[in-house]
Amino acid sequence: MKSFRKKIKKSAEVLPAIILFLLMAAFFLLVFFLLIWGLSVSLKSVAQFRASPIGFPEGEWHFENYFNAFKSFNVPLHGGRVEVGLLAQYGYSLLYALGGAFFATLVSCVTAYATARFPFRLGKIVYAIVVIALGLPIVGALPSQLRLMSLLGLYDSFFGIWFMQASFLGVYFLIFHAAFAGAPKDISEAAEIDGAGNLRIFLEIALPLSGKLFFTVMIIKFIGFWNDYQTPMLFLPSFPTAAYGMYYFFFDTRTTSAWPTMKIAGAILLLTPVFVVFLLFQKRLVGDLMLGGIKE
Image (cartoon, one colour):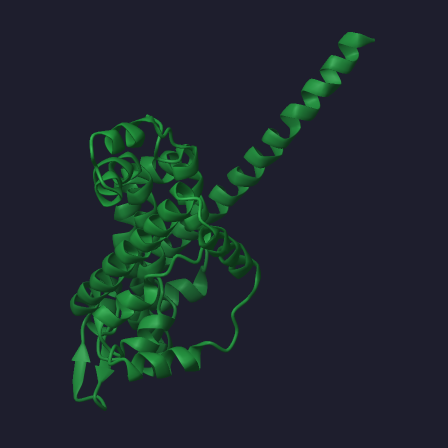
């Protein structure tokens, strides 16, 4: 009877892991199928797609869809007098995503360190604000944001958009806070005895110890900012990013006749840089965030 109960208890412990594995496997297969389907559609002609929407192209593979998408991936500015091509959009996306990811991660890291290391009352208030902000949807703040950015002279500039993204509100503040709160204080206390100040302890001890976590969060935010089209469309109208270019390309009437083959090719052009980043840093994305970045 006892052995039977042990088997039931063991099965109950293993069952959630099996369910999670099956869900993750189903999600992976779905994403993989969509990626392969997109690649196959991007290499078809319109006639081939209409004849067979699913499956690889039969006969000739139409790589010209990518060249045509590259040529048509333009965003008009100043009433159509100037058009920004895909290469320039890549550059604007890199500036927006890299700068925004760095400042957003830095502010979250510094704020979390201050609230986790120094037990003052304001730190608890900041922590509570973050938790409340995660649960409350912010609706209707966009007009005030646009007005404030315009009054501060930060509208339509990369410095302004970086300033706007430099916020500690979010789940990554909690991750940094947990990492700093759980880190051993022996090293910092020894540094204090040797005369090191708070800024030096943070820059030379705390920040290097959390370097892996910092870099991992920055990569995740970089991918999110790269795929963001709404914020650059509203706050950077003179610097269209690739995500906004994809949004404009999707609804451009000039490419309607090539739907969806050339437009899927354009989506893959947008996906390629993020896919390369993921392949280069996949181990960090999977492991370092879970470890917390402190322990080796």
